[in-house]
Length: 398
Image 1 (cartoon, rainbow, N blue to C red):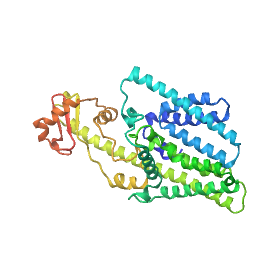
Image 2 (spheres, rainbow, N blue to C red):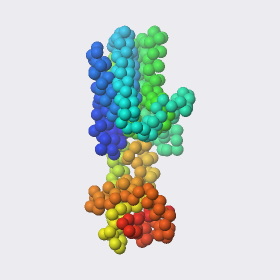
Image 3 (spheres, rainbow, N blue to C red):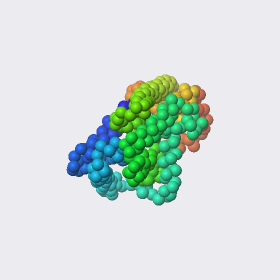
Image 4 (cartoon, helix red, strand yellow):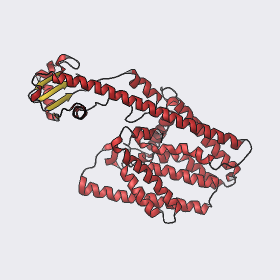
């Protein structure tokens, strides 16, 4: 619940219920698949729902499956045959679920929506514009950027990166512990499978790069990375008493996990603090704009807004200090909420009770070419707000 993806989701509250439903159905589909012999049938339907909500739930499912299979092999709770049965069920769940999604996608695009949106490369699924090696490079860079940003960029190293190093240290030490104490090293092929599963986690997490090279992983898409923090806890749950090594690994896992949760909570509070600053700045600015509009002669005749340019509200807190102390949080970072004309329209209506329409793109271009607009000075000059006919013109910058 404290993972940064959940925090970022709270800046998109109008979709938060759907995102959480998608996470829930992803996990539930895997639980049912593992528990029941034919669980892959209802599991596939649930998985279809989850990727229908958000395609990034595919990597989430793949990483969780990898963790489950890795746990089965290392802890030897099940026979190899049983483990392979689980793997086959999971394959059926994801395969059938994605097939249902593909059918729905095809029907929707061909019979209802026409041309699909190009958001996140969705319209270029299966493109071959870049090589396999380049896709692996994207995976490596994204993986390093999330977990080790402070060590590979000019950004400062925070507790977040330090705890990530501790997490991966626990994963490696725990893997070695099981390989030695459960004597998996005696079965080279079994140890090889476990190593492949462990090393494949980043590939599973960023598998959408193999779907479209234009995918840009942001914080809302990386709930899948929570799987890496699960691994030490899964190991912890299966340690058996061994003098010295087991207590050290167990207590280290407990301490690191507690610090991770606490630090995620701090990151969430910093993010919420910045969102509040963004709101306060935006509200204060809009209050000034509305006051200026009310003082404009003939404003009662205006029915439309023409907002041209963007306002700068940079502050060291939001532009420097916050980004340096938290991961790249989608929706939470930035200096203001007012980025596009519709934002001005909605804020004026919802907060100040003024209902204006918006001028069209052609009308805005015509205004930009007019002599009046060229003579206007940008905000906060007195001439930055003018009325022409039924339109209020707001010039924010040059």
